[in-house]
Length: 191
Image (cartoon, rainbow, N blue to C red; front, top):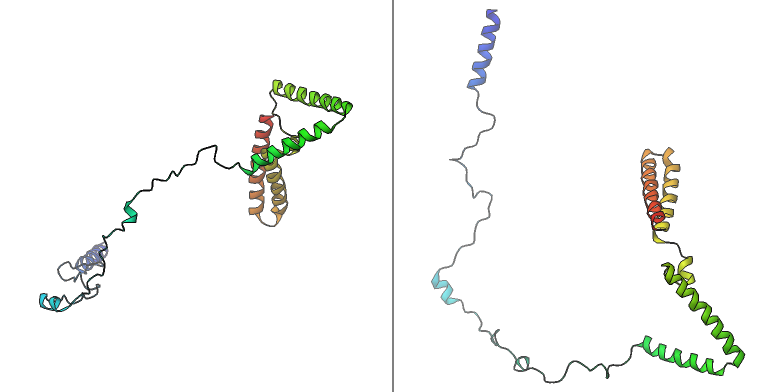
């Protein structure tokens, strides 16, 4: 027992007498040791000998034209403004349609009015039902949500098929399929 007591006292004594591992001497440190030496400051006599060239013009000088305002009207009246190209095209189209309609025979005019009435009735019926008056091409196009659901679904199936190569593909495939389902549910809710 005495051997262990003497051994512990020796270890403590050696540990207490050793120097600290991290020592910082605040009194001996030169704080400017890493900085570059500053340039020598010239005396006032040296500064008096150096002559700088005088500026040719004052930087505060302003042109006389810059201080005057123009009295010309900058806004054109609406009547004087030229028509936009789309408006000009509409005027030409109206004139062409009027010319074509007047050149039709009596029976052709009657048939045209009949077709026009059916189109207007369909539009009024669709408006009453709350449907929009989109053109046929726009109704045939897929909705944004349906497109996104289809894209993410296909990507998800492909990535899941590549899941045997690496598990990362399988995880990305599952995430893509979940996003596709979200877009599909969103599309179904709007229908």
